[in-house]
Image (tube, rainbow, N blue to C red; front, side):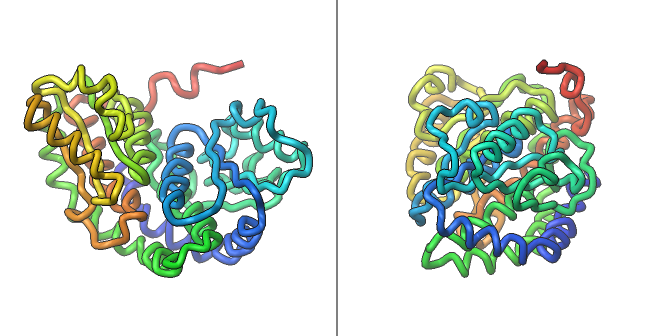
Amino acid sequence: MYYEMMEQPDDLRRTFAAELDNMAEISKVAESVDNIYLIGCGSSISTCYSVRDALAPVSDLNIQVYTGYEFAYNKKLHEGENSLVIATSQSGETADTLTALRRANEFKIDTVAISNEGESSMIKEAKYPIATLGNTETAILGTKTYITQLACLYQILFAASGYEKADEILEQLAAMPDLIEELLKTTEEDNKKLAEELKDELIFYCLGSGVNYGLAYKLAMTMLMEGAIKHACPLYSSEYRHGLIERAEKDVPLIFIDSDMPGDELTKIAIRNSRDELGAKAIIFNLKDYADIDPLLSPFALVIPLEWFVYYLAHFNGEDPGSTRHIGKVRYE
């Protein structure tokens, strides 16, 4: 995991150098369709959530997110509909995502595959393949594949968005490798200390609003549970008052991802209630502490300190953050 984290800036640079023209072509397709379906699982679906929620307040693009089988069995699909399917997968072989892509091909819907494996089934079978150039990723968490996949989705969809500040977003996206390189250097020690302080915690609740919900989902589902072997639960910040407020007791750790966006008003209310009134351990990752970028891009910056946190949390518990216990052994057949 360590080496793959450190490879993120260069892998992002190489992916953009190789695939930018290809992504521009796909953006033109995206501009003209009625529906854009984003398909993924695990870290991949978290990238879909992030870009959908980044565009929701600024664009009229109709973007829907599905896991693979939810899409494959969607009765509303019809042959030749004016839509675009973007399937995301690190391996390009994720069974349900591949099923969704094939279903879209059967319906003669234009398909895009974004995968880190250039010879994978998804890359071969999609009309528009995008290969992220991160070489094979072996650590389970999804570091370089997450960041390159997320960047491709942002590049394609913001270029098609009609958002008046899209050019500014894409300029900042182009500079993201330099920012990530700096954050890898500057955020390690603080999050190593935080991980040591929290190493004995058994469960973490991860909350985010808008564009940060996807990152909260990734943090809980594929970073804390798969990487650090900790129980974790992702929630929308606005849902804090439903359910979690009954469990946010003294000393329970709650991780909040905050970018000071309008939707983060509820994030801040949840922070105040959990910390000041209930005495929970409110752990806050705020964009302003790490980068001066458009908040719509916050997952790119905030994932780096979170990677260090999970890396060391696993270390202090004697776990290998790159290995798995059951993934790859249990078959869904």
